[in-house]
Amino acid sequence: MNTATKLGVFAAGLAVVFGGAYAVGVTQEEDLPRGQAAYSPEPAHGGHAHEESAEAPADHVPGGLQISQDGYRLHPAATTLEPGKSHEFAFHVAGPDGKPVTGYQVAHEKKLHLIVAPRDLGGFQHLHPELAPDGTWTVPLTLPEPGAYRMYADFAPEGGPALTLGADLTAPGDFEPDPFPATSRTSTVDGYTVTLQGEMNPGQPSPLSLVVSKDGQKVNPEPYLGAQGHLVMLRAGDLAYLHVHPMTGLIFMAQAPREGGAYRLFFDFKHGGTVRTASFTLEG
Image 1 (cartoon, one colour):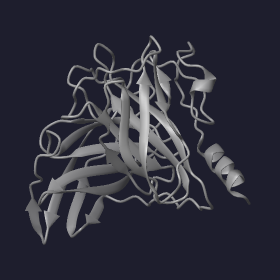
Image 2 (cartoon, helix red, strand yellow):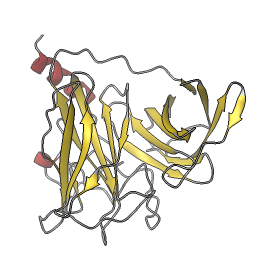
Image 3 (cartoon, helix red, strand yellow):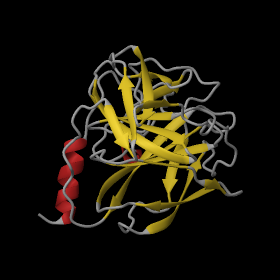
Image 4 (spheres, one colour):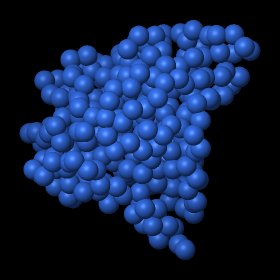
């Protein structure tokens, strides 16, 4: 099977249509990632909560499934990147007037958080691009191996809603997607052990807490982007970017749709001056 065929089969197998999506078309079919149906949700976002935004009900469509929403559209300068090579990745967000957005609200000390993950969810990158006066965002980005990837831009424009827009990226070459990681509540990274506590309750807010330890002793993470840690949750299949709101310390409130599913959780924490990422798999 050639590379193009593999990519097509893999992307088609990942397409999922959310139940309960509304019928009024905010975006058009051509605005959406491959294999996705058109949605018209209430404003929704995930990951990094903006202080002024309200928590969306669990039956609303999660963020990251659409390339455009509420008049805003994500424009990557390129969507095909050579694997294993660092690229100066550029993109912009067009506003309702069609012009690049230049004003953004700050959330967790940044105006925009960029998440990049392979579609098999075996990895994760949390990046912070630089904004040019003309509205162009740039950041060094490496797609480590051939395959299909998803990018998420998590932001709130000045005077606009908090949004998470998504787009597909491709690193050409032969690849085989890895099996979805087995359920796990413990992650080990660089000698640190991170334990996830709590349950995912579909359709209801779910508190999740994390405990970091090293050599058998509990560790208190250092402040990082205005918090003790940051948690991103992606759903298997459609790669929805789900609501995770920081509460206090290492406690987060997760918001999952009523449909449930399997999720990958990526937790960034800083200790000894270095940021590390622990990953988990949960069923909800």
